[in-house]
Length: 314
Image 1 (spheres, one colour):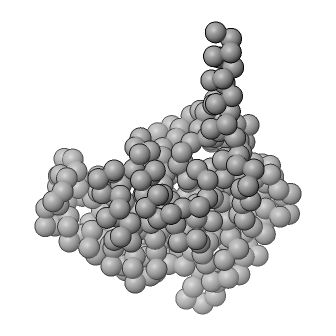
Image 2 (cartoon, rainbow, N blue to C red; image 1 turned 90 degrees about the vertical axis):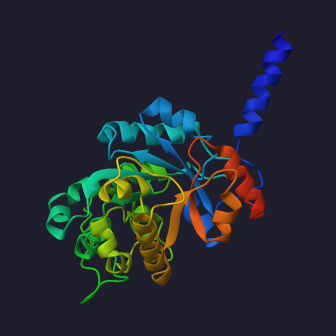
């Protein structure tokens, strides 16, 4: 019986241990994969240290940490990151999976974002790897969002008619650098938005998820510093008068909204986010969907990774 338990324990350890041949080139595993032309798959996370430690060996490439509708708790988020570090590294050799956070600040207009820029500062100071910005209705609001995530010395993409000066302050790097496992000075040079800064390690996304955002989709998607976007079927449905997501085939008004958002993403070279199932993951990849919500469905990610012949361990 003792031999049985030891065998099980060793098997679990082998499943979660880093592959000795894995040599990460980046802090942010999601960016590293996108640079290789590989789709990325995410799952959802919440809670504090113990939840983070359990999720350190997740099958997903990144964790979407929910604070838009979940508890708005920066202490828990900091503890979650500590838990990821304690439970790591990943099989790919990265210190942690990437963590992207949704926050309860909408991109309604520039004034709203300016008044709440501290939320983005606090979020990034926990050591996460990006933010998914909700209800991105206003291009000016999205610009203010991106500026809130950058340091003042980050000059790529700034100037008249472009981005303004970054708003992150000195001191925000200390805890974040500890979570990334690098010196604070190195964090300052690497904590910038990708792909605007090719060496950046922060991944910023948009939810273009209501009819007001759809009307401004082209301008919103054109803001420098954004890497990916989704059309947010659930909120989009409510915006068009449906109580819940109607499913596919989509009704004409929602199908048109999706088309407008996707076209704006394509013209502005943003990666697109949408759901994936075992049945549709290959067709989604063929259609160019590169950020895939597999949720509690790791078989879909497994099938997709084999389909694209991924080499990075998972």
